[in-house]
Image (tube, rainbow, N blue to C red; front, side):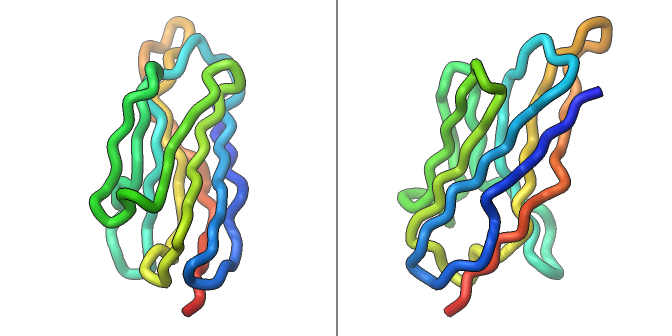
Length: 120
């Protein structure tokens, strides 16, 4: 079994910062891309940022210059530093990872999400 567990969400005022973390655990051979997605009420889930195992990353236009994704391969952990938060960043943030498991190939896994609320 594989689990992704997010942490770091909460309530913050506009202009503030939060740092999300996501740890992957279980029978993992290796992890390829990891990423963060978000889903606001009444909207579809959207990509926020993704990062490859080698560290190359891409971001949604709406968060460029404000958010930074990073990872620690030794700890199977991905982070999302969120600065200058805006009310429109309010959403449930989900961690995603492409994980290789012995005898099972590569599969995409999702965490259960962490709520970020930005007040104006």
